[in-house]
Length: 494
Ligand SMILES: *[C@@H]1O[C@H](CO)[C@@H](O)[C@H](O)[C@H]1NC(C)=O
Ligand SMILES: *[C@@H]1O[C@H](CO)[C@@H](O)[C@H](O)[C@H]1NC(C)=O
Image 1 (cartoon, rainbow, N blue to C red):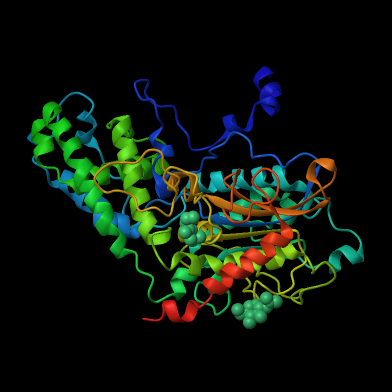
Image 2 (tube, helix red, strand yellow; image 1 turned 90 degrees about the vertical axis):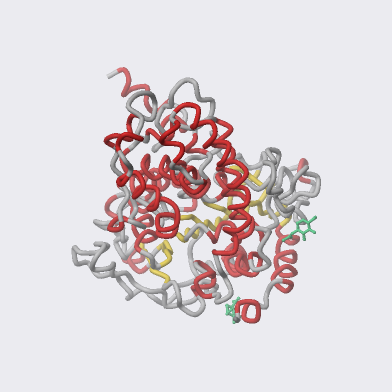
């Protein structure tokens, strides 16, 4: 009874899902250092508040999908060879005591049949995110009350957009279930079609692909080349790990190659996602976790960060669309798809059959009558958007994100930290707000970028208070950058 009564008073951070306690000799929680394999967490305890005397007007939100049971490429290239090695290993080489003993009866929770599927915990995390976003932005949501009047019924539904991969759709549905009362969320999170509607944006559709999954429509986008610099760094740190293991479990360590070290560190993440914990999370030192985090930061610098010339081009469409939606010249009317309702057969969202959701009738930059615009997508998009918005790239930082990461040593004081940006449910918000009072000189309109709850400076658009930017400045700045990185067709053509 007492515990229940106290619950609402606990800070949000206590309620965070996915995080298990770790053994006491470890300082850091490896699950917060696994970049795109990090389960959902919110790096700051509370979202950065708006400056005093300011009020939110509109928000555009780009969210990566929730925790999956395994990524195809990481499985094929790295984890599967290690898993097969363990299965086929001469049993006498597997340690019989100590912290590696668990390998004797270890079974991989990851297999071909569940790759790319959102885990049950991932669904709970997305539901949690729905509540968390509702708490933060309640005034921008449609009212919770049941619709009664005719006028209410005629209202254009509030839309949640999702890329068309099943993992995005499943995440969006759980988010809707967390953020809306059950009479609005629909029985599976697809929305009731009246107040709330989940819209599926085909990954390869003409206008929409570019705002939610631009890389899927860009022929020159290639994930592979980024493996080369990342593996150079792996070749620096992994042999040291193998040497350390040779002193504890020599026969086992003899069998390992660099990729196996990476595999075990990835498995810490995916096994935790699948079954709640992993022995691998206890098997490495803090330094070794920081080394693998750097591996991912190197990889993603080149794949989807400042190290790829494509990144700002691929970040541009969402930001332009967000600016259009934030500009808010669209409060008057309907967007013409009232009769466009989701199917209500009970099979929505089952993995095999494929979900049946309405597709958008209008491109994202058309008129939409709502104040908070959430879209669900893949890891690449928040990173591209960060580059377009010039986040983490302040010239006053010792190692801004645009600077190439050295491959012979780790730079700890770096601005590019993908664990903070592209973890599962990692999200970037553009918030438009207005302020009153002397402190602000003029009353006025502002915008700021918020990454996983933390306000981040858009270098070059920073003439507002506390990391913010004047709306007018932002408006021009985005247009200038869109012009500079607007020729999407020619850079994406092979
Ligand atoms: C919407 O995007 C299309 C395609 O990029 C463009 O032709 C059109 O001008 C845009 N409309 C607005 C209102 O920005
Ligand atoms: C990152 O910052 C550097 C130094 O200020 C600047 O030259 C570069 O254009 C910035 N990158 C982007 C994508 O804006």
